Image 1 (cartoon, rainbow, N blue to C red):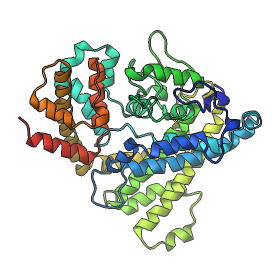
Image 2: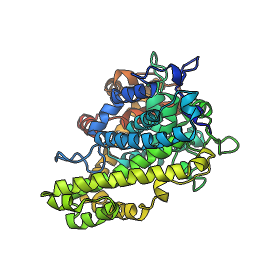
Image 3: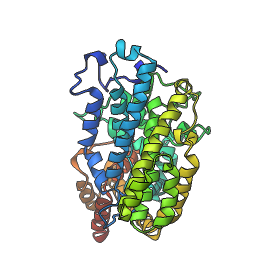
Image 4: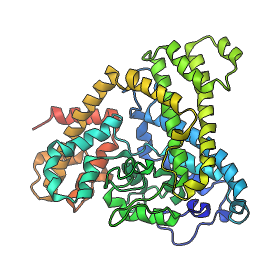
Length: 447
């Protein structure tokens, strides 16, 4: 892979080249990506989507929105630090093409901002709930009418693939979705493969999938424009990662490891003394003991250690990336950066404690159970109505249900797969609160 190709400013529908040298530095193309994402309706809806703790009444727990903003800040730092070294290593990127270190930060920040944009309500259980509806619920009836890969898209509904649809999906008069630069889309694509074959290798890029069958053609166009390395054979589509996708993943790993843990401490799910011991292991090289012991409140002590821990993990992610940059550019680095971090054991300890104390707390489990019920009911109601309309046997009730769909979802989809995915996509973009409200309205008026 080649950096000048990987940093493509091209957008969907472009006919000519966009050259970095011709960019207006006051409003750079990669920064436009960030702006388009932050002003999008899908991004706004993250303010009422659970990160870990559901619909919490406290004011210091993270939503998907605050998580995404924090990941983008960490990603920007990692991107700039890497960009500085890459520009020094390959001076032609600046001298010939006009790239700057901040370009790397801007691309990674925009991709980080969007990294959860396709995630359904109710956290990761939302993805599973949509998949379960097709695998074991009323959606099972459609299995024999779909191709293997179409079916896999539905039973393994994936927030990353859904996010690619959000960023790139066409609507009449709105071709190309948000029209994000191909460089940012490449950095966003953590799993550049289709839903089958499932986990064909231990390569981190094969852990999940990154696009639905309906988006395959455009996904391939982006991958080829960026010069990503194909790694599947026959009819299967898959590529090695865009190098900057490793940085997006690292920023997310750092934030959810440390910040979910911080939420758990502030909520009293993790004992402070116990937690401090874990965090101190990450910051023993950088802590100012006098400053730390002068802090009076739990919140201030945790906040200080959190900032130092994130700083340590940022520097370590940059080191691992730069040491392995040539292998990454050859498509020969099948790991997450944090897998090769000297803090891997400490991060794993924190994650295991979070799983035990936070992710498996009663509050989280109750939210997940509720999510399964709500999403299955909404899927069933809207899919029945959409299919009845297509087959010309719509009841008056179906007619009323379809009036609940926002205007932009009032589009005819000819194929069954497209209809099922269309409704799954719509429901995935509901907020937690809106999904519960819609469920209550429909349940209380069931005919």
